[in-house]
Length: 135
Image 1 (cartoon, rainbow, N blue to C red):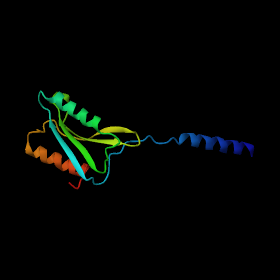
Image 2 (cartoon, one colour):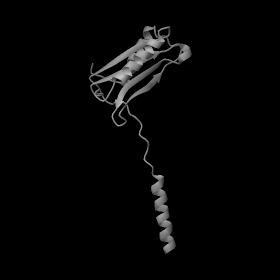
Image 3 (cartoon, one colour):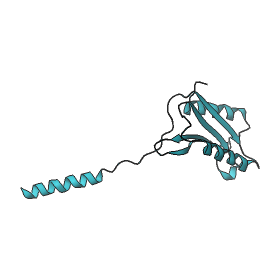
Image 4 (cartoon, rainbow, N blue to C red):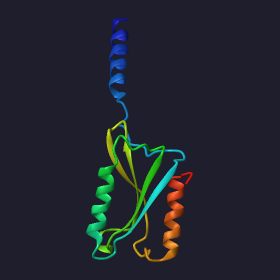
């Protein structure tokens, strides 16, 4: 009988140790915001470093006082081909982490030209799905 109790206690202890809390994964804002700002940065030229500075400036300007239900920031960035594929980013403040997050929402094929009006239409359509807004 004591052996059975001992086995039950050890098994319960092992199960308790195995139940680690899941790591927190930041979640971008959900729902419809008042407005969404879309930055369309085509840096397939010698201005790429300035566009990267602009992205860093946007990220550094977002803080706890930036309400995600009031507005969203979505950035389309087209770097030089050697630097990577075009991407759609979302910048937001995660209250639980107390930190700004910049998530890559989507990447686009490298051959997609940012000067093509169809690309702009595609990016705006994707932004509307990811960061819907009233305006």
